[in-house]
Amino acid sequence: MNQITALSVAPDLELDSPEALEAQLRHIGATRYHNLHPFHGLLHGGKLNKGQVQAWALNRYFYQSTIPLKDAVVISRFRDRATRIEWRHRISDHDGDIGSEGGIERWLKLTTGLGLDPDYVESTEGILPATRFAVEAYVHFVRDRTPLEAIASSLTELFAPNLHQERIAGMLEHYDFISPEVMTYFSRRLDQATRDADFALDYVKTHARTPEERRLVCNALIFKTNVLWVQLDALHHAYVGGHIPPGAFVPEAT
Image (cartoon, rainbow, N blue to C red; front, side):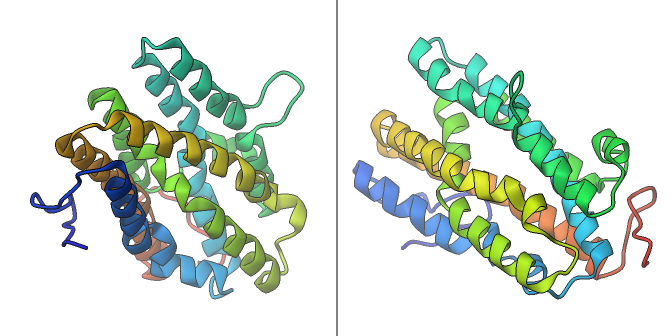
């Protein structure tokens, strides 16, 4: 595989077919997905204390709660009714529906189970500045770039199920303050992420018809891996390195 910079695939990369595109997308995931970040190694290996796990769950809530907003923006980019219909279940997956629980509620079960006040979590007042900047950049990306790139940026879901399985197993094994009941967000996403990734991958392989369009798809995925990676950089710097910025959540143990 050709070299990938922090922003893009190499300009001379040959992307002359849908199969070449898929191969490059999977290479990006294998080398840049945030399962490779050292913070995840600490989290899943039982190397964090409860306060550090709280900080992770609190900050990740902002990402989770923004996904329906992002997906509403994606829907607004399409005149094609079939694409809108296909995409809109992603909103209810996270928001839930009347009488049904969604991913945001499941994430609040996790933060509440970790001892965080739900009102504080939902206020997002304690999250790291880098978390807010990265997540808002994701919303801006799907609003400002092409609809093809907007869909392509969701392709990190190709790699999410393996991470969820690793997280469920590792956190249940290593933390006595984690129970299966608070991990339902991840178990539910095993099926949802696979379904969503299958649609998005088929969409970009079908609609990215030129090498340049395929390059845009690859670069959109690189952007999204950066959105995820930088959030863990910030968590590691603040809660492992001990450089918590003013006003951010401070665990009791600290």
